[in-house]
Amino acid sequence: MSSDPGRRHAGAGAIAAAFAAGLPRVARADLKTLEDAARAEGSLTWYTGQTNAETAERLGRMFTAQYPGVKVSVIRTTGQVAYQRLLLDIKNKTPQCDVFSTTDISHMPALKERRELSEFSPENAARLMPQFSALSEPGAYYVTNATRYFLIYNTKHVKPEDAPKKWTDLLDPRWKGFVGTGHPAFSGCTGVWCVSMRKLYGWEFFEKLAKNNPRIGRSAVDPVTLLTAGEIHVAVASANTTYQMIDKGNPIGTNHPTDGLALCVTPSAIPARAPHPNAARLFMEWLFTEPYSRLVAGDGSEPLLVGVPPRPDEPPLATQKVIPLTVAEIRKGIPEIVEAWRDTFGN
Image (cartoon, rainbow, N blue to C red; front, side, top):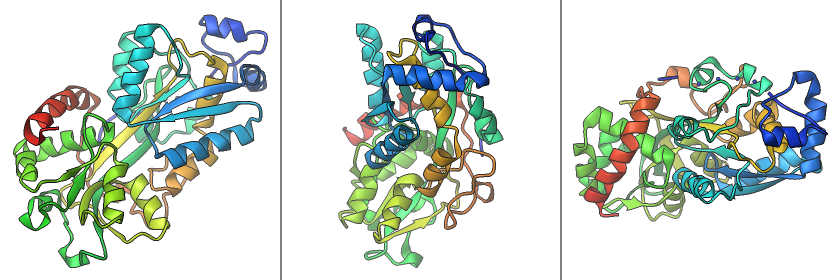
């Protein structure tokens, strides 16, 4: 792993109004009180880009099954779109979001600096694996997903021996018109991949990629969809989307690039003006439970909690070369990448 993740908790029934007024948290013994307060609120709205829509809805249903009476309204978009939506809510003083789960970790320090995050420490976060705990900011935001970016290919069109083995193989003219990627202006994780590639190879990598006329979707899901349909033959993809499509029987092969994985580490937090603060706190606690961690790990995301294994066909992250990035590099790099991307690719 490459950089820096974190931990703690909240609650109250008759105290629900006090929470909304800004009281930060209560002891673990009052979790039942928190549940009662969350049920009194009845729902929460989750802005997320960390999984595809199908998985996000499934997670919402799982939470409600565990806590009947607390409905989750899932607003699934790409990470950058979710962030812009949250900023618009803040600007217009029309709070909608109760839990914000981004794919660009640099959103969180920016929101914290503006004092737009609630103070909250989920107690369950104490089980977070050390490398993800180090990238969290205790009391503010916590890593709730992480996925590797690697190379994929359509096995009906590409033989394993011919498939790209390193990132620069995507620049081979043989893939002209048949290579796909997401867009860094929409997908936070695609932005992280772009920052990683620029760190390894400079912007020249993308100038050469542009000559291959790549198919550019918005989210990390789009290249996998195009590849599955046979419209492209190779792509840059996130593991959590790819393995779900493999599980459905699609003809997808994977390669962990020899020049290093890009790792997208993604956090969640409660906005300062969350309309349903108790339901939000309960949901944050739930994001650090084994059912959640096992489900996302089974779909191909990295296991979050100590003791939760990766899926059997996914090489452990510890065995892979990972391109190191700091939060500061991501925060500075993604806006630069987006600007340069538009100049190079014209969109």
